[in-house]
Image 1: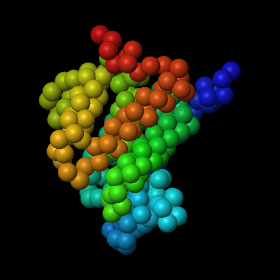
Image 2 (image 1 turned 135 degrees about the vertical axis):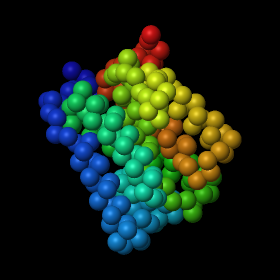
Image 3 (image 1 turned 120 degrees about the horizontal axis):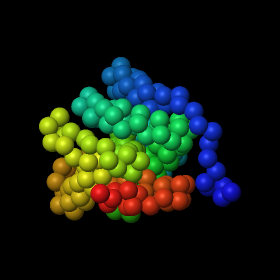
Length: 207
């Protein structure tokens, strides 16, 4: 069997809830000791000086309460369902790999463009990957946007992707890491291709 596709033994350890707890814990620590945000956030200058842990820690730090709540709500709604389907070990690997690689991609963009003063933080890169996984695994699921507008999960994910591409090109929502979101989405897509031998497109476009 291909090493990249060797499955884990299925277990459901509620890892999505553990990740939510870790994010909340780091945010509370930020409130008690604000410099934590700057130690955890991914800053190109700091990474180049050796702070490589920021490729991981940036995923657990958030700019404000609304930033945290939005990401954790998405992780709860979509992440718990994805975890139940693929198992906790696979889910944790997927979450961490896509989030870290989204950070690496963002770092390279900042590095090549000379944006050394940027501080990237938040779980959004991994969250976008989780949303892609949800739409791929549950293509018939219906999501109610703002609790009113019903959309099939694939339409929601593709719609968000188009919005992110438009925003990254036009600069709308300055200060929002649109490229990191898109990178998380792209790495999630690649993960499905490499790890599961499945092209998400086949699920996203099915009726």
